[in-house]
Image (tube, rainbow, N blue to C red; front, side, top):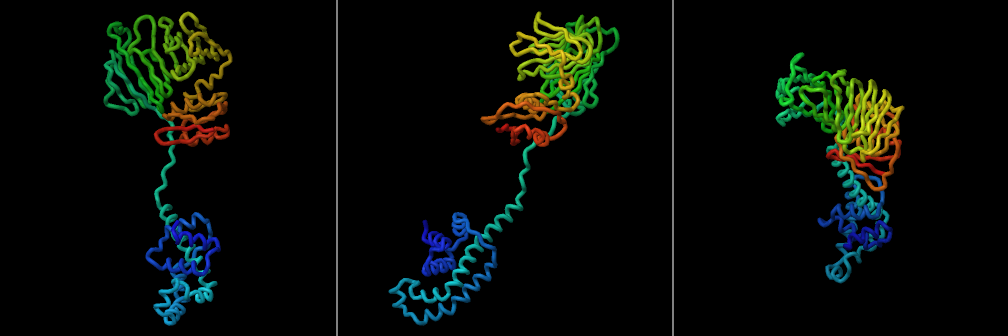
Length: 405
């Protein structure tokens, strides 16, 4: 520790004698005096004092000591000064001025510190404040994969969209893509059948009208592969993720939906299928009509208001005869329905809609949520609504959401 730093500490602890105070005063008047050392000592000692006029203080110090310094210089010879410590001949001056010097010194030290702190705070206050990370809600948009493998963005009406695919006209209107058959009685040979795929990335949803007039609402992070014209004795599509269907009735051509874990047969009905690969089950929920769903030979027929769940092992089918139908299609109606949903299931829904990567800190407990929230609000606003569940969240850059205990 430097000598001056030690003396400053002694003074602030009321332990400095007259000679040490004089040494501090003398140091303050030299080019070696620096505010950083005063700041450092002050931070360590944590003293407080009101801000004062620094120029006025220095003028007071100089006025009160100038006359005595001159008198002492006249009365002391060079030899005497050389033989004694530099402050020895001035002790009577310091003693006489002790109250004034002590008061002035503390004001000098505190003023230098407070002035520095004030300037630093003023500079920091003018710095631009970094924006708190957040995530906007999802919106309409998708990617169309054509028969030749080329990709077309459907986020906006693009000139890249072809007029036809496999003999079927393709029309994009707002957030809906429609496939319109060429005409009645026009049969496309199976060998000429082409397939398209509509994919919604995270943070997107989209509506599709299939060639038979059936309507499909795709949730975020989903895809559907379908023929550009339904030929033969059945209509078949492949689904990954989640979609709500309104199937056009055609008793001669049953409608089939294939997922990685299930197969659903439809005659004409409205229903929802959730088949995300990162969920532990596939769920089919029926609103109207009738569907047959299941795995291989193990299938069940659902009535309106029922829900079938197929586990990840693909060995069992559980049927809920009094399903919460509104919860199953809440996403289609612009809401999250978290009633009786576990933490990780809720986080998966948020990750898909807000395009997030979710991370869990150690010690996070699973909790059951409840209630409904809009899907059309920023992530930060939605998380405020979940704070009563004793789960804490932190939004970071790069679409990272951290779940904390």
